[in-house]
Image (tube, rainbow, N blue to C red; front, side, top):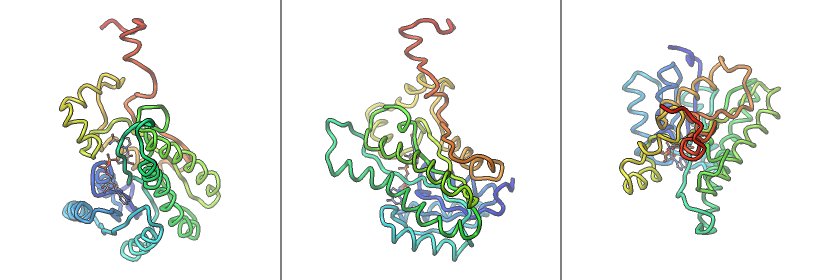
Length: 267
Ligand SMILES: NC(=O)c1ccc[n+]([C@@H]2O[C@H](COP(=O)([O-])OP(=O)(O)OC[C@H]3O[C@@H](n4cnc5c(N)ncnc54)[C@H](O)[C@@H]3O)[C@@H](O)[C@H]2O)c1
């Protein structure tokens, strides 16, 4: 597959989980990948995997909370791989929690990494994309942006990403820049939150599956496939879109219907 043969992509947080799967998917479709990651070990591992699969990849150590680090990292990536045509804002952090218990510091940190970090990357990429007449940006938001599923600081940041997506799409469409957001549901990764939840209950993903109309939680590749589409020319007329990739979670409330309203299928 060579849908991304002319793509130079920066994927933030590509050292782990969904970001690594996005990098691998884009690379498998021909893209050159800049792995923009705060964790050097994880980032280096992704680069090794991409290269051993025959792809072109370059690691840039970046902390998305530091605008200068992003500017330097993106400049290094462009020098190594060529002008960046696709930015995937995937890096994120959450410590979970609720409004009653969250500290002021924790609230600020989650807004800073998840919302301000995404803004920093967009701010750094826009001038070059505008100069060259276009590019694509895919922001990884969450179903938490659309409904309350706990974790309010992370959710507020992810909701902010949706409005930011629409702002970029509206202001820079005439520059040939498309910007879309993806809202994943629960995705089977070993990030900190899921690791803690799995330690408490090793069957957490099986139990969650009943909430999903498609009967399972997501896999990182489910998100990667949607990114590869939105980042490609096949999505040339799509911008400002907010795409849930959530197995139907936000479409309805199957469990409530099954247990309380009793009007669902009887099988
Ligand atoms: N896993 C899920 O169930 C799920 C659900 C909805 C949305 N998402 C979103 O998908 C994306 C990936 O999630 P994941 O589960 O793979 O997470 P993860 O924690 O496994 O990976 C996040 C990556 O971002 C990197 N990172 C963190 N802070 C950074 C910083 N300041 N600068 C640069 N890199 C940084 C981490 O080192 C890590 O490699 C995130 O945006 C997350 O919010 C995940």
